[in-house]
Image 1 (cartoon, one colour):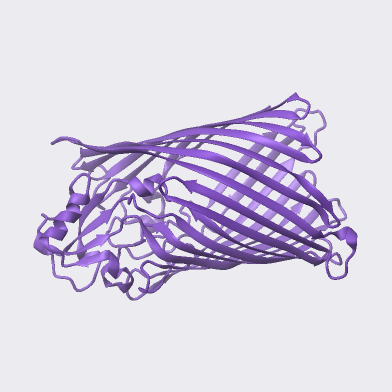
Image 2 (image 1 turned 120 degrees about the vertical axis):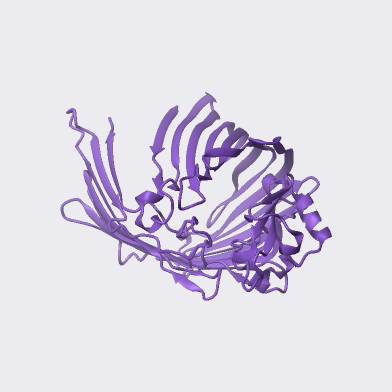
Length: 571
């Protein structure tokens, strides 16, 4: 039996605590307050010879709080909002394992889980909460799975193994959103939906050649194959295959490759999120527009979304020469090609009217009927954030950013890692390690409209990430130095495009353990760390509004230099 309890709490980081956000109001939250309790438990019991009962459980409760000021001349109560959320979740999973003999085993697993996210967000103006938006994302899931795994035969290269199984899943989402006004009646949006799915799978491992055969140029050769069938009633049925190969021409080198297809149904949130229509000033959406121009902006779900599909393949090589013990070098290539990817197609709306890639998502100079249909889509009517009255003649475009199946999305790249470790005369060891990822990704929103670069652009993953370090360790002591770098990105939202420099972090870690000699301090471990020792800051970006956060918070950390200390006792 294992039982674990964890408590964590972090205070917020606000704009007044960072020099590069000094133009924002002091109350604006950059890193939210968070408090969490978590409890885990696991019990394993042999109830009969060869029969084992397992029961795993998880419970957590997390609270967060953040504040946003929409003005630089007053705090969030002058003009802005606050958001508080309470997340409670639990998962229970009993499993029965039966050893069938002759290297075969079977298992039956049940899973039940629920999570509830309650949130509350008052909207302030002049010190008064004119409106309060609150709601719940309430989810539950139930599943059952049975499988059998074992050895079919013994071949010269090893055991031919097979695993087969199947299961059932049911997911449910209960969504509510209530907007209460100090003047006027409240508006309520809600939906309660569920989805069932059935699946079956089979996987085989075929070792054709093993080390014991001492075959020239073939130290090891293993083939794997898998097939998975999914049935979402009323949506889709699909079978997805995967094949793989491991070829080692010698004990010093492993070559691996895999190819497969995959399938993912849209989430209930993506399908059934209630619609909203906002009226914004058009100034940041396009250039050369008449003064007072506005746009209607649509956001919400689509019940008719199709499942995502993908084709993936990868190849890798692992070099670990016997002539140089402790040295390893790995390099791998991966490629993923998505079709019907479910996304909100416009990642950043700045300058979207001038970008031909999004032409099919924009209705220019809409007539009264088109504007009325766009407003009717909203479950709460038109939300006017333009700062002026709605005038149909001033609307220059309708921008549709509802969840949609985009035509094509591709991602590919390389992972490289090297490591060398060596024992020292004093009983310790030293190791040097470096790894890096190079990524390319693009998205085609509508067939024939051209591709949009993703990786390496603002608010998307950078094209390069790397980390390297050296560690000295022995039984009672460890010291390490690490240098990490997150690559730069390109701000493509406006012309001219600008390069946003990356972020580099120098990290130090130290640990010492008192030998377990029976004394009071025996087995006590002291640790200390400094992250981002040189306090490298995020680079500034162009903003549309004076209250926008002036850095790419998707990629670069606002925490700065961080000190940590730890104390641990073991018996």
